[in-house]
Image (cartoon, rainbow, N blue to C red):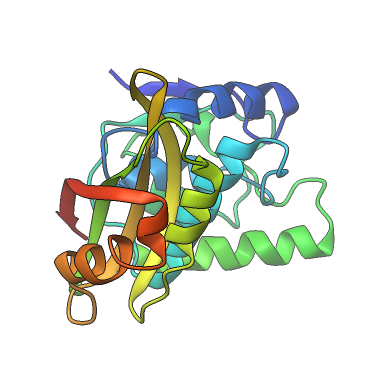
Length: 228
């Protein structure tokens, strides 16, 4: 059964999407898929930072689209639109949404927009179209559990220390805090790696569980590892 969303260019639609993404890294499943592309391509502009979960998800999907493309199939999503479909955006609909003869869910990216918004929408449309043509390119999407020492660990500083780890071919993505009991929470964070440049085992052993990050981090576990 397809997941449905209200118009994401309205406050009401953004609020519902923000609540939906509170406990999710992706629209469906545990890796970026064409469901994420379908919702991503419905935005006429980047979402406001006040919708923290949407903004974090949008930034991650935008980076994936530009870095390596998204080819994984989704479960199917529908996004409501308050605008009339534009003839200049069929490629976005073809690349991002499940095949459907019904045009009611097409989104007009260029209605009542500023020139800057039009330019940004055109760039996203081109990136989405190109991503549909790309094949697997030696990249992987990884979901990590990062565990603190105890309930007194400052989780904001822990996440900051993790994200400060920089490596060529490493891109940090969406994250969330997950309760594990006794007042302790763990950091669950997504990352995208270029397989030839980054070893996840090396990243964990030599960076995340080594100084200075290990001041906050007790251990790391790989929850999911998917080829892109």
